[in-house]
Length: 467
Image (cartoon, rainbow, N blue to C red; front, side, top):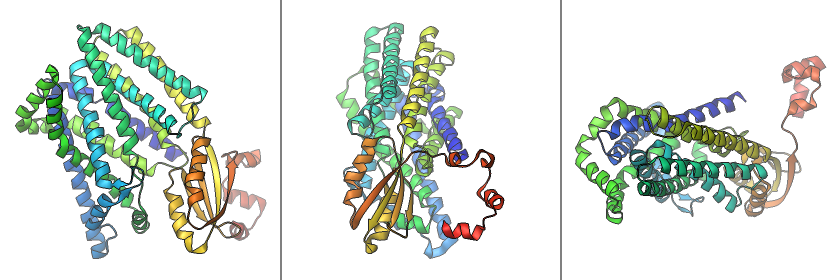
């Protein structure tokens, strides 16, 4: 439980740091184009991540010599392997698409909105992305709509409408504010795409073999993915800007792009400034690294997607508070309190809906002997699996699974488990409680297993042989 609490705290820090982006960004906007700031941000992130990947490879080479389990050739294998969660495209194609339509486009729209319409109105984009992510997952059958989730969506929609109307009333030009809200909506769509697509990346069988020999492969893979993703963002950045300049004749957008090309030689000034370092290191490299590390090491006893959905609302709340207190944006305090109230309701209902919908399942599999290791690997790759064990007896493999909905469980059983090669039969057991202490007498609660053995005068060797 301590591990889960610690990682929830780290995830909260990630969203807090992302929420603080407007603070250093606005200081830089007084001197530079928003697009110049973004480019410097991605350029340093790519250089940092590539450097970390190189250091890891060098360190493993020095430590293990030529027998190092992670080598340069594994980088190329990673890039050309198929991604089964993204239409079986090669990994480099998947990362390229995420970089262009997710990371690049999302960040461009976010910073452009920050500079032109302010942090308060821009925060609408995050709320829109949350609505879209929940709706898309429901449409794909990955989530079920419960009463709490309906309240969650309604409160988010109300908060979005209030933010849009009130921010438009505070703008000096209603037309400009309306155009800004349209851009914010596109930012929310791009952010939703990034959230959904960035997690569609599971390890291949060959990677699991590397992981068995070198547990640090997960860490290496995270930095490799981030380095390639940020590198693709840098490479495609200028072509994407040229396309936007050609397609959209918005005067403010044209001005920002023109300033970007004029300011390219001054990128070093951004990187070397205090605000630049705060933005690049504190609000970019650090939170992205922590986020992806958490996504690969999140305890199976808790839902990563649940806590991402709950804690992501920290970001717009921080944006709202910063906009009024630090950036001196005009917004009625009474409406701010109303919006924060609705967001707190959304956080509560999201948490309750997800935790109440948890299904804990034990899946027992009987398979052909020659398929044993292959099936265990396939079961380990299932996102919902918390533990995979080899058995001796009527069944050969036990899989401990956790689902958010019964629909997700049924889909996995019908589309994945029943199609496993060499499967003879399977059995599903629903776990009714996760609290082991309920079966322990009150006087024994809190005692360790060893203490209970001593008190009951049971031989530890006999207990071990039975287990």
